[in-house]
Image (cartoon, rainbow, N blue to C red; front, side):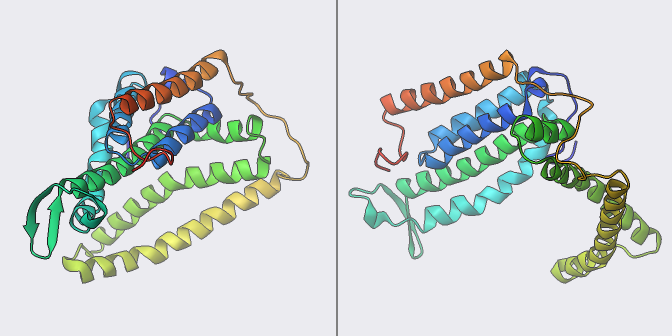
Length: 272
């Protein structure tokens, strides 16, 4: 499985209605957006990975292989927030040491860690939804449960399906260049030239595939009627509502527990 691709399975998480699952993820992301402490995103990051592994039946090796490169993405946020934290805003800062013109304080490191964990938690929530949701079911759920126009629903499905196709196309182009003796070049300039060689064939392939999809849809009179029938009907079951209720209860329990311990900051009403 590549990064953020659907992992086929038959777990409880896979069988959830995509619209309800998306709503649950949205609620978690809203809470993480308001939280300013490192404990809330850290707990949700751990819970998301454990849920994917234990309930979603996604191999832990696959999860870590897909997410560990993202740790590199969050490192600059941690470093810059730690170094450039304004200690004058803290009445009694806990300064650890001075690094040139910067004062490295505990409050700055906490702020940087909170931001880094929040980004990782956002990514984990996105991973939770994408790897356990079939693209076709997602489009059908948006049309049947979320009531969006089916033209937009199928446009989302086509865009969803094109991502892995472009990945395969990129590998084909790389193999073709390698056969012709055009290999990788070192350095930033070499990588830029390499991507320039890939850009035009990828763009041409994307335009060609888009035209074929458009012709195929026009030949089947897609969009000629305001409504249409479906081979499969998705429904919101009791298990879906139970999952959403469990997520809400978990959000409330974690917030109340951390708040009682004095570890929660942010959320508007609680001073950061």
